[in-house]
Image (cartoon, rainbow over all chains, first blue to last red; front, side, top):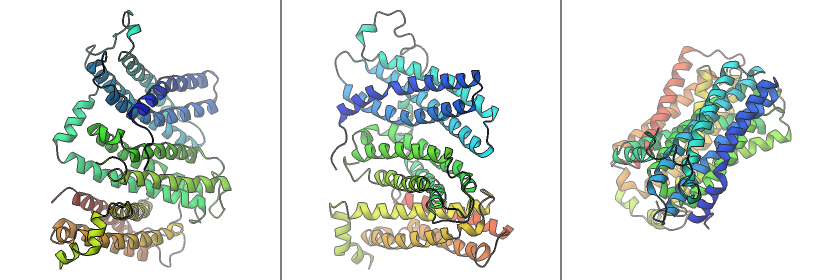
Length: 321
Length: 155
């Protein structure tokens, strides 16, 4: 299979994407605050959708960052410590971002169910977003310290830099934990397969209903199972990150992994649409979904099978494992 | 016998062919079948345990067909994978543990179908026995996945 992107392309991609999490979360926070000021529920919903999409987009930012670090390694004027500091801060902010995205999704799902946003979830997302903005700004600042000689003389350069306090989380410590304990990898693999089955079970029941192969239940009743799908995704996200952090170079240069991330992004957008999907919401038990619903259902199943396919093919396509 | 299988032309082709259509595809189809089979089983179990109460029990009966279809796929691909590694898998107790767990899962699914689906009309009453079977099913399938996955790492 031809490569999708080499190391330099991925480093380039990292430079292209790395502003999305910072600007995206600030934008999400701004929209959320504006929705309070204007007492506008719709705007609030939009801000949650933005936060979910930014959480999704942060995955390629993080993984391409590892490729960029490999491309930069050993180059003159680049401090390895600065890269480590940025990577650790990025990992911490990535985790914050995913937690925020999860709660934003949960708020959207609850809203779809009960018809309004709950105060508890709204404020949870607000607090998490503020914390994420702080974490991601720190990661961005440390990223700038890697190779921007023009800012070195600045009064604030290195303000949060390496040595400015212990890092919240260490990628190297995670890597060592996975590689030094022989039980961790097989355990994560097992959980990864169980999470996948759980997620796909939910996707089957929801999307086969939309496609009309399963009948006799309302869309609202299967919508109730969506959190189980996200639970499966959560298990796979965590275990998948253990694999990636422990052996990043096996994935950054693996074309099957690149395709897997591409399909994961598309499947994630699809899941969001499924969660807030209006057209099928009032669909009674016996009614057929509109064409848009069938397309949505069909693409959800195809995309998730593609994610599985390229995951399973990681050792066989592209670089050897 | 096991060695004969493992040394057969089929086994040699499956294991040493460089074609993406050999071992990788059979393994991926086996993974796909597992995901579909266990995914459908988990949904039936969750419904019986009281999640998604709005879903009429009778409306998910078709998921059993999905399960049988996925099982057929995995019986075929699983046999192919066994032949390829017969001398290694044959004496491995973990492998037979996995097959036993799959058998428990399938028998439990049959019992669930008979107890809560066959000939039932809405509203279906979910009995304590049905819920216990759902728990057995959840346990059997997750344990079968665990045993199957560990085959790649243990021994």
